[in-house]
Amino acid sequence: MRIRYKPWARPELEASKFYIDNPQDYKQKWKTLYKNEAPFHIELGCGKGSFIANLAVKNEKINYLAVDLVDAMLGLAKRNIESTYKENKKEIENVYLTRHDIERIFLILDKEDKVERIYINFCNPWPRGKHHKKRLTHTRQLEKYKEILVEGGEVYFKTDDDGLFNDSLIYFKESGFEIEKYTYDLESEPNFWENIQTEHEKMFTEQGIKIKALIAKKCQ
Image (cartoon, rainbow, N blue to C red; front, side, top):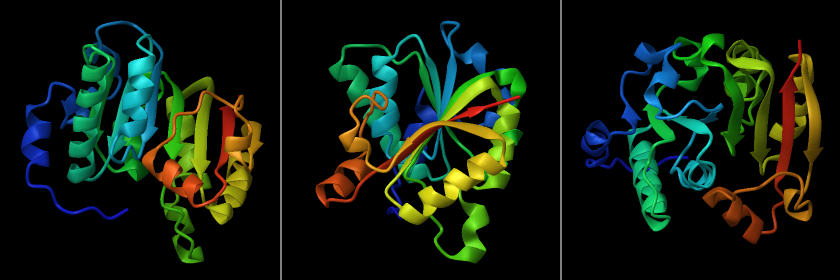
């Protein structure tokens, strides 16, 4: 999703206590940032941050890292997190933001970081065949995620795009993941998981577009 340049974003991020501008320096050391020892979950492509803000504030006993490549997005995510925690009268202690190219996630994370869950929400579907390798759920990306996930670690994925979802079901199987459950209509399955709607999700649902979702587990 394209977003206008926001001149305030970079200065605000650099001044933020929960933004990391040098993520490569924390490879194998992410747990040292957090106040408490806790399971470590990440969101790849956090966008404006409404999802991670609402997820993290509800789950204080989990540590979160949200990754995006665009300063403007991360700036909005920062503000969303601050607003959400303020509304809930909580201190921001279990979530960090960082800027990095997700295709090179292995440069900032590895198995020593013990990632237990990865969230991927409404990523670019890259519909043209020649661009499929850019998909965050493509086989070549999933192989990278396997290197940072613990055994039994999971990927939570949702999208509005039928083509991307159907192809992703194949990608996960090709990569040796076990698909624990999936749905072509998330809204009709309230017990599928504890769902937190993103801005995109609300928009698509209002338009009558069904949300597709899956949970895949890393196997030995």
